[in-house]
Amino acid sequence: MKVKILFFLLSILVFCNVEYSQGLLETNLCINIKNNSDLDFSKDTTVSYVVTTPFINLITEEIFLDNFNEDTLTLTIENLGFLNQLLSHLFYHNINIAAKNSNSKTESNSFDFDGQKLIIPIQKKTKSILINYDYQSDFFVRCGLNFDFQPQMYEWQSWFFTHPKLKINKVEFNGFDESYFFSNLPYKTKNSTINLETNNLKNFDISFYLLNKDSYIKTNYTFDNINFNLYFLSKQNSDTSHLYTDRFFQIKDKLVLSLQEINKIFPPAKNKKQISIVESDLKIGDNQSSWGMTKTITDSTYFIYMDSSFWRDNSAIHEIIHTFENSNIEHEDSTKLFFHESLIEYMSVCVFYQNEIDRQLVLTTKMLDFLSSKEEVKSVFSIKTNETDTENNGHGNTGLIYNKTPFIINYLALLIGVRNFYEAAKDFYSEAEIKNKFLWSDFEKIIKSKGVTEEQWKIFMMSL
Ligand SMILES: [Zn+2]
Image (cartoon, rainbow, N blue to C red; front, side):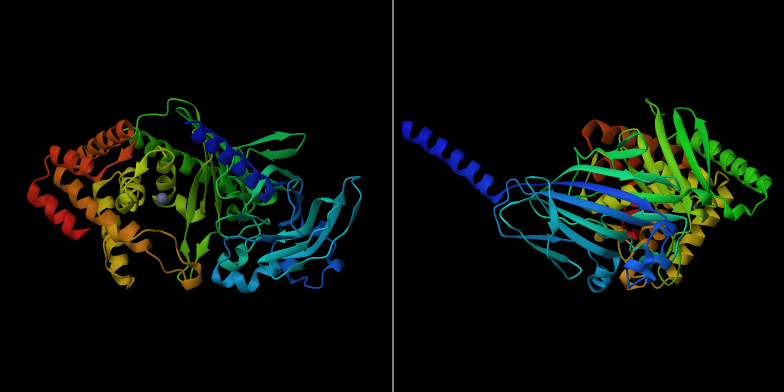
């Protein structure tokens, strides 16, 4: 017994020692948002980048080396796509690196950067490394020029340097005179400085989104327990404000009707919800398909950004329905896209097109679009991602998820009626809430309990 305890104590000591000697790097990130006019072009010979985006971020990344004993620090840029592996160095301008010693004196430090790896020789006396650079988003490479909105998504390309042992202490943003700011993380604002909360950070996933204030009209609307912050592109309405006002009221009326319908499927929010919706010109691929995304920031705050055309059909409602789903509930892998995307797309069609004939026409057109797209005919259960592949001319599984599968779901609803289908969806969501899991077996059981026969279920499954 004693030997065992001793061994246990020894292993703890060895473990702690290993942890200590490998070191844990800590970093502070400070980002200053700059407008083109603030930049000193003369410093950089590759001025072309400045023309392609109005949003340049002056970034200082300070890495503390208290527990670091190696003579070289190697940092990397994460999530580089194939194209960006070749282009990456173009997005990080004027890099300069300084070493800070214990007297807080700084001196220039050599480095080597190939677009992906940043290699920095470290001297014994160095306490921290300061990396300064101008960063521009790669968004224009993926989606074309956009001077109004700039998503900077970590999943598309890391905008800071990472290390496997890196812990992010602080992320601070400054300089919002000309931009609105959003992030995938919650944040606090103090004296016009924004500090992100990084406690629950996973995989360095820090994304931020900038909006040119001049291009947007911000408006606010409350329905039930939901507070909508809407950001409309002002240029679309030219300079006639009455057009803008008309558009807002049209959207608002449609929103109210749709939300009343959504309340039949999902129980109204218990606590106050904040949904910010930003419209922009977001097209992707050679067929220029519109796209958008919903980010859950906390249990009660959401950020949606989407192409302006999303207001014209059920697409904006699709994104809004995402805010009603409980994102903490687990999915079975094979059915995730069915429930998380196709079913939501189907419900958004029902909610937006409340007239039966309109709805059938929209769903039939979806199926015709899918058939004419030459996309491979396969089952929604066989695919794992709904991402549009920007490096493959925008081809993906979009038609299968958002056109074909909702058309097949409509078959079930036609058998039992839309009202019954809403009821089934409502029962299914409360069942999932209790079990903390979306189960296909529950969906089957509930749909059959509303009157779908074994034979009809088989036809549905075969068609999916
Ligand atoms: Zn979706």
